[in-house]
Image (cartoon, rainbow, N blue to C red):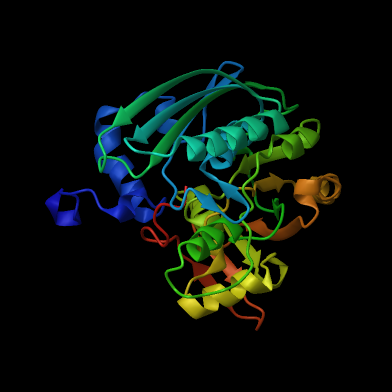
Length: 333
């Protein structure tokens, strides 16, 4: 373990990139190795019930476009939804630091309640713990969720074949950059709002269509999620730079800081994979929903470059897209 730098936990181990994968494979899976858990999906499918859990430690607690309360609902609802389930019930647990403002707690709870109502889920159980001052950064929230499968087709990575199309429902990198700007660490003044949103109202519009697979590209962004899809597979993925929906504001901040928008976290985006023959129909349905007006087909599953993600640039060249090694932006969700 020491030979691969795994004697201590690093911030990068929580970033959703290669370091996170190493921690899960080399440490957690040594002890937690249930067959369902080892499938490494966003949620566990138990017959027709889907179950998931997530913990939120974002800083700052309030950022343009959202806050930790909305994030806690959206994150868990989206993990259920991308499995082809209708989210039904949530639990909500809080770890709160001594001295935390009651008024701030009320604002978070109001946002949490409104976000749950927005997507029709019920918060039916919860827990609260208070720790000594300095033992917690304000407030941490855990939400677990239960949903029921209701898509016409069971979604699975195993259904992906060359020729399938990759669809995204809008602009990339908004959440990560919004949180970064809210920290005022780089003196960058730009109006970028997080995309944080529960996606179930959009995704339920797709339940009767021929969808093969869905995933929300959160930590590590589009680059991480697509690389997870092709790892050890007999296919690759090619995305087109000119088709990627990236706002000029996000692109500008990324240029200044040396980031790639495709590696930045999203909290209101979904990757949908459909066959070539169905892709335009799926795209049309997504574009009619407020959460999908900027949807675009951004790439194709390919026979060549098996196990890799490539990017066709605007200059006509092609390069390999690597997942982030660790945490580009810590504490974003």
